[in-house]
Image (tube, rainbow, N blue to C red; front, top):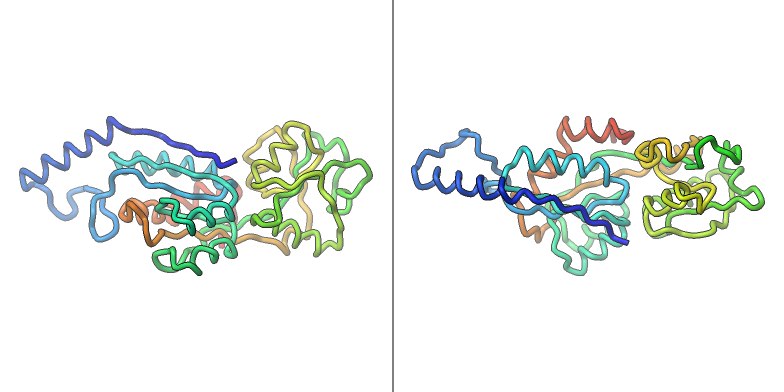
Length: 268
């Protein structure tokens, strides 16, 4: 199911709006006076709605908190889910300001419909790992080990980027695999392992890292054949274009790259 993370800064928003009103009435505002601005020079305020791949939940939540601190009077509302579901929602008119996908293919679903404002930027990359229970009790060392009799393996659905990457990696290794279930996003697949409902899952390395000691990650060479690029774009019909532009700038900034890099994402 779609995850939503919303943080409210109502008191900050009221203070910021009041301050802007005072400056406007007094005529004291001037270029470079410290007020935040985005597209067309408008002030960055209000709610910015970000549709983002489930694998970005941890890092984008942190960046959203930083954004709200840097831009008093703003609130970042996230919709984390499988990239294909998010793309379908955008193309069906769901109100959103920013889209961050886990593959260029899913972003193309949106750009082909003319839904983005300009060309998307690839801001990070990600590679798969095999997630197992702590201690790797089944001794999984390779993709071929996932075919052991009785082993319960889950994959992301074939339509979402982590599922497409898994299919590419399995094909590269010449491994035929029938999972016990297909999950609609990478977090759901990883949760199956965390809850011991599955013995292993093919997920992103960043999700393995985010899970801490709840799972153990196994690297495998075929993952190099299935590296996913993550693009981000401001949407053409963004209700809050100024805040959308500012959020994309934060994600693609040196600070954004640092936060994403610490989580295990790779530079493009």
